[in-house]
Every structure is written in structure tokens, then in C-alpha cells.
Length: 395
Image (cartoon, rainbow, N blue to C red; front, side, top):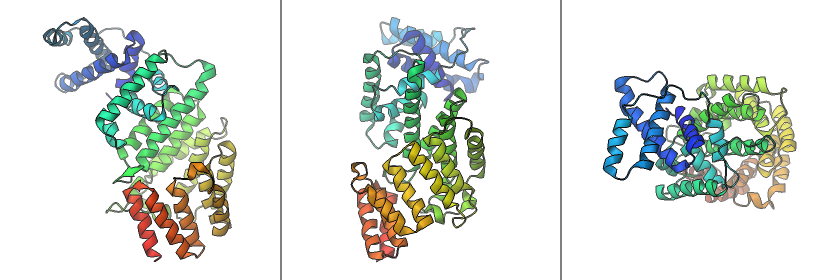
């Protein structure tokens, strides 16, 4: 039903418009299916069944005059035969592009995508981003109104705009995955529900757009990164750094899928940042041990990535690779180029990496100070504890 929900919603929005009303009707149809299918069996054409029930609920809502009449007509609608011919057209891709409309802010794009395409409840989304449910409900409602006022049509963007819009869609899915893999705040390090949903939606997008290299690259990156999830924390929830993880706990099936996907993609389409990040993740995942990691190859890939998609986070990660190849002093020198970058002013990872490289360089006092500064800058409790412990070890 989670796969069918955005298809049914897309069909209704295409037919009737009125995003809010269509979404309510789809939710009611899904509830009816959840109650009826276990007893009566899944229909031969479950998508058509849902479209029929949701459409009748929608029409009933528009025509009803009282709550009593709504209940009576809705009950009767469930007994009507399913429409024999529902166009075999999947509107999920169009719905995904609509939810990532450029008129929306990034938080609104995230929320609306998870609500309409991902099928998460408002409460689940609010919990994931640590905001009150009422706040998230308002954000989603405003996003729908903003799309309506912007005059957005339920169609795929015209070809000249499609590449730019696809970048927005990929960025939203990337942010959903990152928030799940390393939560920005709160008591837990990772949210498996968000990473799983991001992977599912990206896999769906890859099915719909199999020739798009960056879609394949993002899916590979997610699989290769998520493969390490079980080894990232101890039983008590404390963080285990990459070089200390038990690699036999990594998900080898996911690694194989990610590598295969990347192998089919690289060299066949123009290279993009997600493909490069996936290639770096693959080098880490295929190394038998931390000591056997091919840092020369990783550094070369980061240099390509910095040409393809320059930015402070790429430079931060390249500094680690430089340190592993040319020594911690060289990494610290590169890291110093970010000190005056306003985009990193409140990023605790800059101080955390600096602390790690200072520790490798044999400067425990300076390293301890940087670990403590990094701990004060993050809202993630597991990261606070991890950084504080690193600092305490150097006291």
C-alpha cells in the first residue's frame, strides 16, 4: 500500500486537483483497504480499487450536506464495483517533482515529500525532525497552499527545466537519508525509518528514471553507506568510528548491490557528485580492514569531486584523505583554509576533524580543546558523548 499510495494520490490530483482533499480521500481509501483486504483478500487490481474508493469518497465529500449523509454514502460506496479501467500510468514521479517544487523551502520540500510520496504520518515526520506535530502540520499545509498559489500544474516539468528540478528532488532525498543516518539533534545517532524510506524512494526514482546517472549514483551511495549501520554503534548506543568498526557486521548484500549499481553507471553517463561520493564509499566498503584502505584512490576521487562539486564539506573530507596520505600536518593545513568560511562557522565537524588530526599529529592538549569545542557545538547527544570521551582520553 505504501507503494500504491503515491500512485493513487497522483491519479486523483491529476483528475481533480485540490491536493488536500485528494490526500484525505486517499488516506480514507487506504484505511478501508487495511480493514477489508485481510478479511476479503487483496483485489486483482488493488490500485484500481483504491482509485475507485478514493474517488467516491472525494465526490461524496463534495456533495454531502451532513456528517450522517457522508457516513451513509461512504459506506455505500465501498460496495460499488471497482472501475474496470484505470489508466495504467504511474504518477509517482510527477508527484515527487510537485512536492519538490522550487517555490517551497527545503524544510517544506522534505515534509511534503515524506507525507505525500513516502506515506509517513504527520506525527512521524514531526518526530523525525524533533518539532511539535502541530508545527509540522502547519508546515505541510502551508506547502500545499504555496504550490497552489504558485500555479503549479500536475505535470512533469518541461524538458529544459527537468534537470534543475531533478537536482532538487535528489537533494531532498539526500537530506532525508542524511538526517536518518546522522540525526542532527536528539538522543539517538540514527533513524532507520528515515534511511529506509530514503532508499525506498530513491530506488523507486531509479526505476522510473533508469538512465539518469545521478539517480543511480545516489542510490548506490545510500546503499553503500547504510551497509555499515549495524556496526556504527555499540550496545550502549555509543559511536564506533569507521576505522574501529567490526566489518563482519557490515551488510555485504547491500555493498554488492551498491557496487554493482555503480559499476553499471560510471563511465556510461556524465559523472556527477553522487556518483563520486558513491565511488569513495565503495573504496571504504571494499577494504578488508581500515589499514588496507586505499587512501591514495580516495584522495584522487575527492580531488575529482571537488572539481565537479566544490564546497566546504568536500574540502573537509579531502583534508582527512590528505592527512592519511601525506600526514596530519598536511591535512591540518588544508583544514585551515576553512576557518574563515562562514558556511562552516557553526559546523561541529570542522572542529571534530581538527581534533582528530591534532591527535594524530601528537598535540593532545590542542586536540582535547578542539574535541570539547566540537562537543559544545552539536545538538546530537551521542556525538556529544563521543567527543567528550575522546577529549577525556587525552586529559
